Image 1: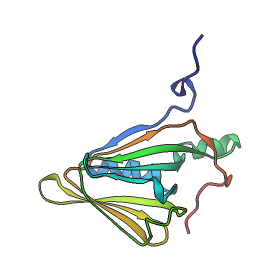
Image 2 (image 1 turned 60 degrees about the vertical axis):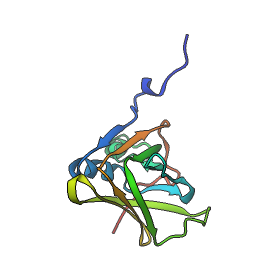
Image 3 (image 1 turned 90 degrees about the horizontal axis):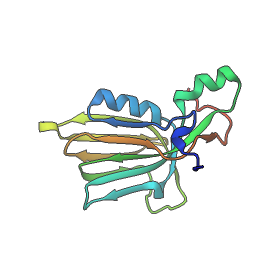
Image 4 (image 1 turned 45 degrees about the horizontal axis):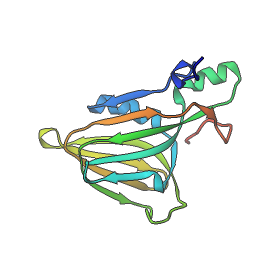
Length: 157
């Protein structure tokens, strides 16, 4: 007998990669309203990698949850951006260790020869801009889904 694995469950984890603007739109929609502590933003300059540990609302499950009358879910996910040359942030203090951020959207502005700028827009007029050599964003769910603490789906006016 072996232990159960996440992959054996009915809620298969997402494993997605975006290498162009169209792919990025899919990942951006899936991470909309994800929350993370400011300490969940990590830049590894040596490996040119920027990573975020997110608590992602499971938009892909919202309609099913409503249809079945069950709780909305969130899942812990890791989002990694490769080939990052420079990171800039605005609208929040990265030294404020208890700060919680909410990710609203991501957009890519292409530059010359495949380079460009990926902008992560945060609630409250914050943003993180990543200058990249080429666009490569990975999103991997790393836990089982869990009941959304608020019990509600995010809503925007």
